[in-house]
Image (cartoon, rainbow, N blue to C red; front, side, top):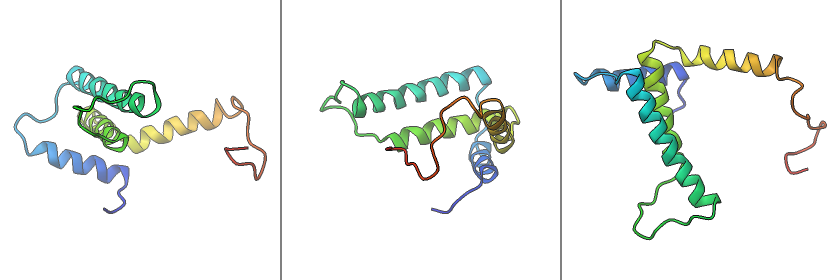
Length: 115
């Protein structure tokens, strides 16, 4: 697989969805789908990190697959609302690097996450 920019991912999803007469779902349906996919991701995380093991009859899924599903629906939602996700990301990173820049304890130079 090749590296893609966010713009290329949004374009690829748009090309996929545009081949169907139904097109994008409406925002409320898309939000329901996103909630459903987040629930599936939560279930996988609970199986892997939590106290609830998978049933032997349950299909094996990966967190990567579930995160991919969340990303796909998020891209669909953004596309349907004509939102540029690169621009959205840049806006939120500016917020975190300005407003929240001193909110968390910074590591010392050379300190790893395990320290």
